[in-house]
Image (tube, rainbow, N blue to C red):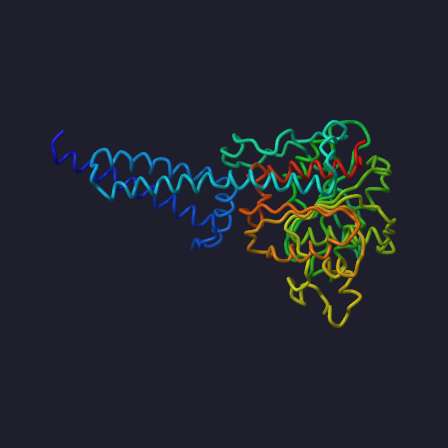
Amino acid sequence: MSGEAQRLLYWLTLSLALCCDLIGMAGCAVMLGADLPVGIWEEPIRLLLQEHSAVLLAACLPGTILGATGVRMNPGSWLARLAGGLGVVGLVGAVFPLYQAQQAARVFEGRMIAGLGADYSQVAEQAPVTLRPRSFELDAWFNMPTGRDGGLEAEEVVYRTFAGRELLLDLYRPAADRSPPVLVLVHGGGLEGGSRKDARLWAEDFAERGYLVAAVDYRLAHEAALPGAVEDVLCAIHWLRAQATSQAGEAWIGLIGFSSGGHLAVLAGYWSAAGWGPADCPTAPGSIDAVVAVAPVTDLSFYSRTTLGFDPDLDPVRGLRSSPMALALSGAEGPPLMVVHGHRDAVVDFTQTQAFMEARSHQAAVTILLDPAWSGHAFQALPQGLASQIVLFYIDRFLAWSQLGPVD
């Protein structure tokens, strides 16, 4: 090969290496919270990079190889060494979340033992549902998320009619013909949007594991002020207990809520423990056995007064009953609670959960925090992502433990 051709090949190799490095480093920066000026695509891209950072290997690995090739072609070139070095840095950034996940799993295991007892994992052999065998599967993390095919059909049910408005839930039945534990999923949306369909992925997953799952709609802010939405969630639970055909009459019932749905789920737990509820859906004390709140709103300051539909300063009783933080500070008791919240949440600040956990620390009920350091607000949208795999492993065991209690 002529000298001119070698130089051309060298610069082509180096250019490709630097392009790959630039893409990889930009991806790492976005993963860590840097702005990406692509409009509505910014958060989905950030979510993908945070939970499936293996996608960065597609840029960083070629950048490293091409950079090393450039060094071999021109050992004295600082630019080639820079390209190779940037590729290596990108590779480290792409796999660093795996190290974070390993550390997080170790911390989460310690919290589970501290909260539930050293023998909590024995529920895996005695639980009435199928538990995930592992907290992380590498092949799932490497696979690009494509969603599910929707193999389970949901049964649409009217669970409450209020002022002519029919409130619906989607019922996902497990395959096993027995009395299953019941799991109610409450969608997010800032009390102003969202739908029961948003919880479909988790609903199908838990139904396949043996739960009777109900994904509920509730009245949004333009239809009813708080705590109207909490009353709707309690009415869904009342309906589930009342249906002989659902086999839920004496069943264990748990809640999982996402974002503002987590707010409602925590409130429903407190209301259930106190026996509060609407007149048309009387709530028996203790009708909710466990709550999981994912990235929950716990402080009413998150919402505008328009969204709340009232001013907590002018209506303190209503404010108390609508605020998880106020109820925790008042000493109110609720069912066992697991809070899942990523440190990089740009919607509901993680400091809310920190303050809420401190307020809950003096209560008798078990409260466990799972806080993946690398995750943002909507990580649960990617069920095979790094955070989802780990937290679902522990959610499984938390829910099973609450059904069985300590194992002798």
